[in-house]
Length: 139
Image 1 (tube, helix red, strand yellow):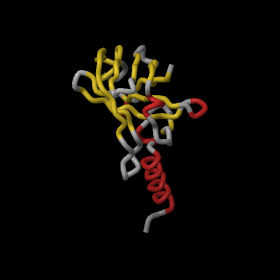
Image 2: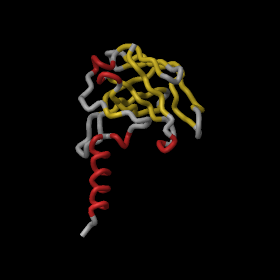
Image 3: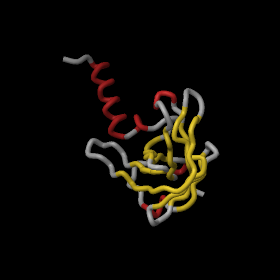
Image 4: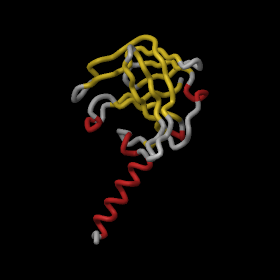
């Protein structure tokens, strides 16, 4: 039989996985609601000096979108045209994500909750343990 601390730890880990907290860095919470194409279309500005434009026709464009990082900084960025789609929530509770493809390279971006419940796009780049991410807010 498990001890109470071990049971509490197991429950905490399960809750983190079910709520999606394990997928986000920097203290962000998952968005928690289904995201629509209308919410995504338009211009987004990243805190990493990057911009995204998401169009209703499932095309996208990016300027200086980070795709690789080392232990402290973004090392590779891409600019240009691409595509996007919403990756549906999985049966195991894994939250929806935004799949962006630029130059044949796909990147899954998390939907996070910002101030007052606003939608933020959180692009985890590189090793998740390092916590290097770019957060985009809708213009």
